[in-house]
Length: 328
Image 1 (cartoon, helix red, strand yellow):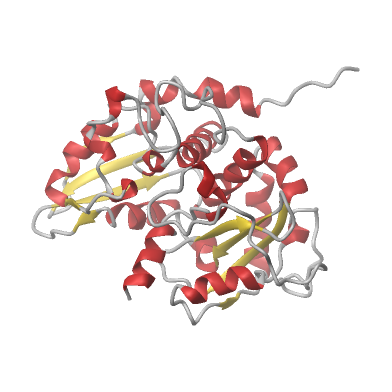
Image 2: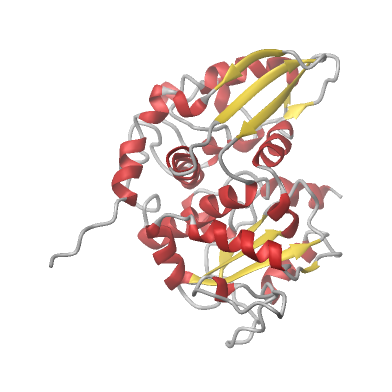
């Protein structure tokens, strides 16, 4: 059970074994070299309803997860997992989410995404896994199938509440995400990891996304090191007493991080920043964290996307995502 719980923690937001070298988040399965796969070189039949042909190169990557991915889940105690066959409605939702990704992400996935798979049997607290495929520079993304029907608010709230020691007589935390659904957000986050790995954005020297925040793959600049926002399970700390929730989020809005999960590592910081930039700019959504009392009254509300220190980082995302005009 302990092993199973640790695995769930590492999958709070589909953190990837592929990015261990970038500074893996807490309890993430670490694999610094590409994982050898026993999947055949030719892709198997896509797990979709037979009445609808696949359209587009990314849809053609939908297939049962490779054996090495399935083995990772089984090795963590999830013995009931099984490949999920997408329904017509689910395929439409996946197609829409993929089409909404930034052009840069779609181009890189077109070259580097080996497999997009969905599994039943992953507990609701888990999300999925992004991992190296057998060939160099290729990646598999495997997601919990029920995420397709999940609201962004449900996903974010479930993830966030796991940071705190529950206390029904005191306060609770709700995270409201608007503008899009959990599937679109997760694909934004995970595909940003692939972009990061392919372009080596956070893997080498400190670049524009880390400057003034990170000094290496795991440590912050001195001015941030004592922040209460950096003392959570995402940083290998103990769960937080619920009564301190407001103090934690008061501290968060004094940092340049868009979420508590962004503090896990430079790669998660980058993925969260880009994903939430797109939720705000392209989907006109918001991220609202509410601390409530036992009766459901909102005691304090936080909007990280309005934080000036977060917004100061958005121009770097704009420059990254703006297509470069080709000379005529």
